[in-house]
Image 1: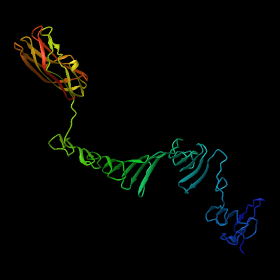
Image 2 (image 1 turned 90 degrees about the vertical axis):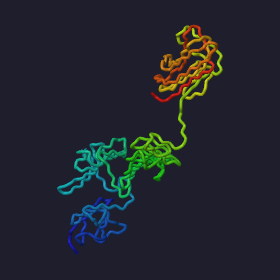
Image 3 (image 1 turned 45 degrees about the vertical axis):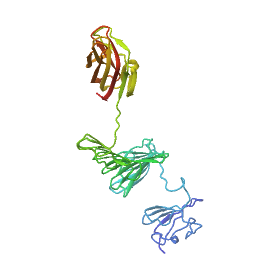
Image 4 (image 1 turned 60 degrees about the vertical axis):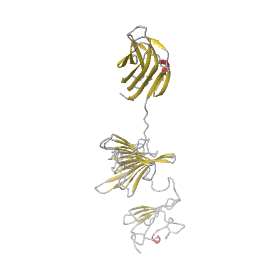
Length: 425
């Protein structure tokens, strides 16, 4: 039998008595070395050890007879509330904390910062309010890393956040059925996926460039940007612009050196535009005319121009207005116009007839023609061909004429006025 080498204080719930304990060995190692709550020895299932052990080697056990470390708290209950586990309570203005210290070195503190909204902290300093380094959590679940949470967002981070996955990393944002995933593989390729109502789109940042797609597979490309150029429907464009379509890998190509364009083929080194197949170009035009006319129009004052009013019929038009009833063509876009006028006419006198084009009431002197009629019902012809620059979006094209004698009459037998848009100014 050994002598006293340790003491155990036993709490007894009903009488609050404390019992000293004596051991047969320096460190209690088995149930037979312990004393039960009522002072008997050894403890039984009816009277288990439920007190504190303080051994001669400085080990403190709470709820356990044989502590395995300097401090050992043991519990074998169904408690899940405030009665379970270890409680560190602060009744004053200080912080409720647990501290970890390497002698002469780093100290870490975890606990409740009483002076900062009762946030839970893990900090690399003794005073939780010294700085914002470490972890902050408020009672509403807002978390801050190296910064105080703003109370709105679930996570606030001050500084760069880096993950080092062994295979791939993934960040997911979600609201209802809408999901956004940001991922990176071990090769450094980054992918952003947006899913909405079952449909997904992707943006991939890879070593060769950026691509946009709508399927997980690599062939369903919508667009891509590489060092070569922009691809639409192509992951690896061959030119500055490379558009592919179903059944045609070269729907549109723009060469990155010459700027030459190919439609349904690669660009041609010689021609600015190379096309495979038939083309249809939208041409804007209008025409008004008279055929077999018999109406006579007289000049009030010789040498003074008057508007020609002999047109009767609107012909085809596109992008501008043919108005034979008003003896004019109205264009609706500024630009270069090819204007043509042809007339076959007769007169009552042997007069010189001068025709010209007016553009919004302004004479276009470069667009005119003259014809001197003979006697006896002579029929003459006259033609005007030229280009006009229209600076106004809405402009009227009209024919004006005069003769060298007052009261001279002409009859427009056949006449046509046409206008064709050639392009912007």
